[in-house]
Image 1 (cartoon, rainbow, N blue to C red):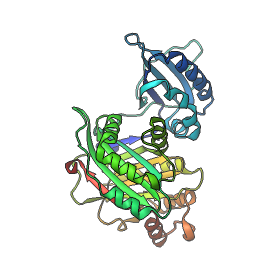
Image 2 (tube, one colour; image 1 turned 30 degrees about the vertical axis):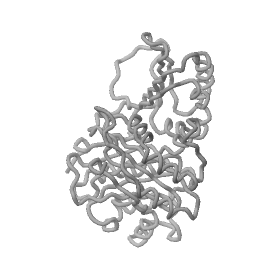
Image 3 (cartoon, rainbow, N blue to C red; image 1 turned 90 degrees about the horizontal axis):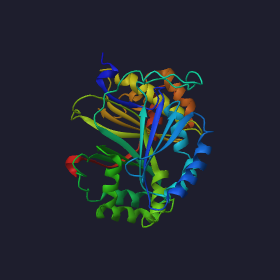
Image 4 (spheres, rainbow, N blue to C red; image 1 turned 90 degrees about the vertical axis):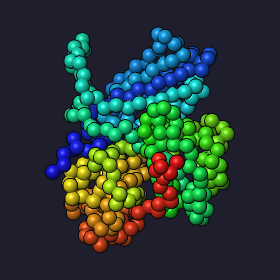
Length: 372
């Protein structure tokens, strides 16, 4: 049987402590405003559940470069906070002070034994148990809604565009972009080899992409002005749909694999629980050599949960793996966390089939690096 170490994987749900690193390049003359904004932010974040500590550092080589590090008991409380409207509003004063930012997030794998005068560490988090096998690919998604009645027009616009250049720089390359719709919700997933931020900025500068974004602007439920940096930043901050779990078979992807996306109708307040369940079940599915699932990525923000799956064979051939559950008991657990519709519970194959059909997203376009 294949073990987890044989799989390409990432997870926000392994219980390990989280180290967040925020790199900032301050605008000239903005240092005092930045310090005042940070002090307010520091006091507010100190009361957020799961937060352990933070540090503000200034470069000894370039005083315009700053570093904020924070430690969290685990990734889920940090993700809950960083994806909240409270956080969006909290960090707004910082944006006027900085030219550029970059956020990095790490699970703590090893640490030097430390002796603290105030006693042992009180954080509830643990160390990451073992290194995970990476593939050098960063996965991310964006999601937004369009005005009801405009779905067909938006799908046509999004399907018909010239792909941007795949090469961003010597170390960064666009690997794949997959775009899905379900009702009036759009989900765009991206895979990047190298620096995700550099790739997203590269794409945003391309004339063909700007034309598509401008064309769908009138159809968006949330207004945005791409010519206004603050408006664009706020839109894309709220549209961010982070990957919280990924697992895939190591090695080349089989030619028979087809890509699908499932949008789960999560009950209010259950988004993190659904993502955690799908992540744990995904590890089990990945350990089964007979599974039709070649790769699975769970994206989650608040109660928006999307599972991207690369599947051998039709979507409805094996309903459990397609939905991300490995047993009838786990299907029942999922049924209590989502709106299962008129079926009420996900208790048998017929219920699972109808639920999957209701959650299956329409593929609008799927472009690999060779298509760019």
